[in-house]
Image (cartoon, rainbow, N blue to C red; front, top):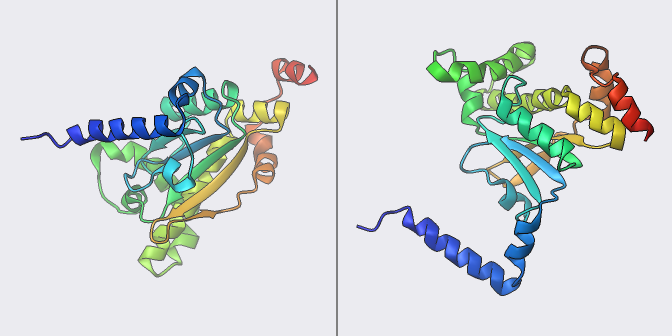
Length: 222
């Protein structure tokens, strides 16, 4: 019996042929370098395809995905991706994108021991704790979940802004800018939560300002 995963190789062959038919130098250019303008931090949900929903081509989007689009400073994977994107790829925009109907968000609002998922979901549960009064006041369960999706995006954006690499690069080049989005799978629409990056940065600087080093200021003067 033909193995189901073999269709992936067939799809790859068709994709290669389509790219070459449109541009014979496509793979030569693609393999040379990458200069994406955007870093996308999204959920691992199989229904949310970053490049497809934004109409982006290979090389235009640097992507990191995990359960419920969490940015935890103890998670070396997400922090390494952000630092590399900011310092080496010099992306101009960092997008944290959640989605309605997120299983991770729903799990975090469920008082249940989920084993190995507990440490990961704790970050989201902390968001629930910070906004408990607002969330508990929402009677409709689905709307409560949807609101936590939005609040989680907001708090993960703040976690990105707390990072030294993001703060330092912004001082030097006035980039990157951090954005918070939510993808509505029921309509296909991307919703901009209009995160006020500069205001958030200013508000948290008293505690999280990591830019007062001679190293950063000397780079700024150059």
